[in-house]
Length: 364
Image (cartoon, rainbow, N blue to C red; front, side):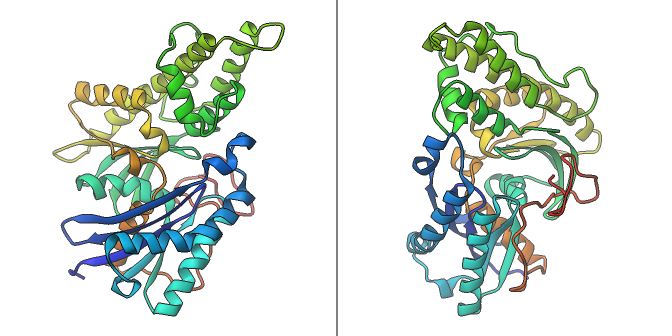
């Protein structure tokens, strides 16, 4: 299959309803449109994403997102060669909203359909934006996931390690909740950290003294909670400057852990990498500028190319789903109308789950 593929992508795995049209040729890809409807205003008073509210919002806006994406691309649905939709992992209500809508479009218009792993969308984003060569090292760092992957090909992902408890994005959200900051927590903590002293609070760096590539952020969140309680006034308030210092100290701790573990992963990857070794980062937490700066310096020291997508392609979006779907379709893959939404869907199925398993399958 050598012709261009025009793919409509649909993403609804968490709290962003997104649609995009991407044109993919054998040598390059072009994003023709990208529409993202956020839900921050719906969840901000609850301190986090409420799955039922998110699912309802997706169901109400997916059709509008698709219509807007087609309009921006100046195309009709019949001009699309493929529909790609996030089939997991994610909040199952949201994933089902997208999957059922995509199935309806596919059946009514007789357009091929493919279910895409949301994590594969993030992991392949550097191929979409920079067309980097395989294999490359990927730090996928988001609200629900954190893992080091060697991306050998469009459907070949080797997990080196990852979080054994909270993902960094989850830890940022919980930190914001502890400090009374708005959601989503990542941008709020980063904003306060800009004016804070990152060395005031001596927070732990979990698993830094342990070999390997695994990470842990649950204890860091607990340590921050204790630090806050020690400076809280009798009237249960703390000063704004204290919040900034706590945010800066927390952000530095996360950055230190991710940078050191990235150093170890790079040393392993460089033993067999290509002529142009590349370290890529993707996922919502990859939008954090302090983390980006630290990882970029690491790559300069290690003489490795650093690749970070534009900020709008770090967070959840449908362009990455359309691109991943088109690549899979070019390889001869497609889904029938009987494929199911999956709340859990690890990329590397050859290894045991890091976060346990259950009736719904391995978590990660």
